[in-house]
Image (tube, rainbow, N blue to C red):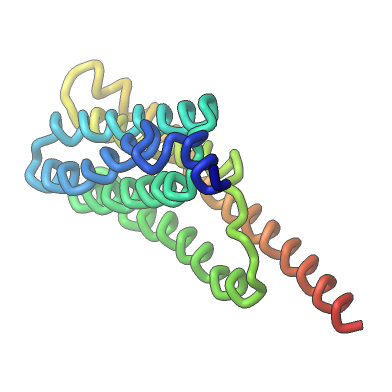
Length: 202
C-alpha cells in the first residue's frame, strides 16, 4: 500500500465526517444571508446556531479520531471566514451592529492577507491556526446568534443582547491578537529561512 493510500485510509479520505460537516456549514451561508436579509430571523438564528455546533464538532471529531486532512484544513477556516463575513454584512445591514465593527474585523483579515506574498516568496508553510485565533472565532460565532436573539422581544432577548455584545468584544480583541501572533510566526519563519539560505550560499 502506498503512503498516500495509507494516509487516506487512516484519515478516512475526503468524505469523512469533519469534512462533510464543514461542507454543510458552507452550504448554510447563502441560506443564512437570504434569511437575515428577508427578516426570517428564526431561520437565520437556527442556521447560525447550527454553524456554531458543526464548527465545534468537526474540529473535535477530526482531532479525536485522527481525521485531519488537507481539505479539512482549508474548508474549516474558509467556512469560518464566510460565516463571519456574511453575518457581519447581514447584521450591519439590519443595523443590529455598527458598520465600524464590520470594518475592524475585515481590516484584520486584510492584515493577514497582506502577509501571504511574503509567505509565498520565502516558500513557507502556512502557519498553524493558533488557539487564540480559534478562541476568537468561537467568541464571534457565538456572539452573532446572541445578538440576533437580542432583537426578539421578552426576557430572552433582554438577556441575550448584553451577553452577545460581551462575546463580540472578546472575539474582536482576540481576533486581532491572533493576527498579531500570526505576524510574529511569519516573522520567525522568515528569519529562519533567511539563515538557511545564507548557510547554503556560504
